Length: 453
Picture 1 (tube, helix red, strand yellow):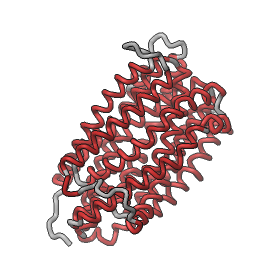
Picture 2 (cartoon, one colour):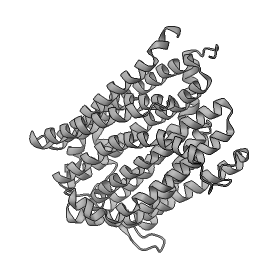
Picture 3 (cartoon, helix red, strand yellow):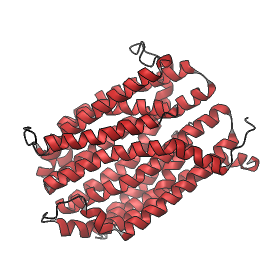
Picture 4 (tube, helix red, strand yellow):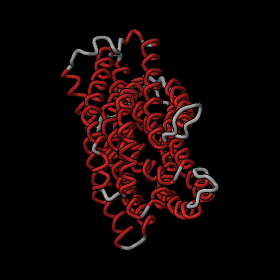
């Protein structure tokens, strides 16, 4: 075990150095979704509502498959700390294999999405428009999952600034592509929601090209794509064993949010549009916590690779404190400026603008309630993943979101008649349970070492 002990300020500086580019990259990724929401909101509320549901559908499948990419992060971080370049390369390659395999598996669901959305209780128009979006945007799951694997590989090596710059350029590209394809500018045909889907695929493909080019140019010694076609069944199984619980954990949480989108769709187009806007705003703040969670995974993985328990526990305390401060700032913004934040997403002349703002303000009040626990659960998950503890967190997530959160959302929203506020209050309950349980899980693992800190 390492005898060097970093002070808490030193941990804070290290977390910011590694985490700010990651947070910026995550915010950039969300900004791509936000630009879709804003620009489709300018185009029409019906299109915005359809993209809200279709985007949730895509996100569920994408994040379920991203578990294999995320499994690469703690493995590469640990192998890098050990100086094991061979295992580092093997883990990344098999993460790419599993990501592509997952994308192939779920592509048929994109084409059958109209029937799935109709079965889920969405209107004919929302289902039809959402299916048109997914028939195109669905192809983006290939570059998106491969890109996620490369991001995990680069982040684990603490090369986070390139992730920020690639994603930032992706935001600009997506805005321009939306301007071309949604509205039909510069001689392009006006394609509405289908244009947003094309822009999404183009953006993900270009970001992937940038990430691969950087990895090959700056890390030639890793030879990450050399003999990529050769199977490595031992490492593939190791990545799979670590990754599938991460994917199901993420699926449980995202499934909770997707289920609430479906429930909001039962209430009508206007509540669904308000939900989409409020969800985009909460996604922005969540990405700060997610960036801190990624830092937790990387630094915990490094600590485990060096057998440095001091580093693990002090780093955990620093990350939890930073997440808490972020949550406090978010609560203040959501409570103080809800009308301003929601109004950004719509034209002043939108007929339903006043109704959407009224509903959205109430939803942001609920979002303010779950900020603390949402931050806690994502940082705890990051720490546990760095320790390669994924199966029990998966169970905790499934219970929190599906056995507690979704039933509470339905009961509060529809049985008690609280509608959108009730649905979002169910989110609060599920996230609060997950945050508490995952924090307890982490500190039960770390407690025997607390006496040496």
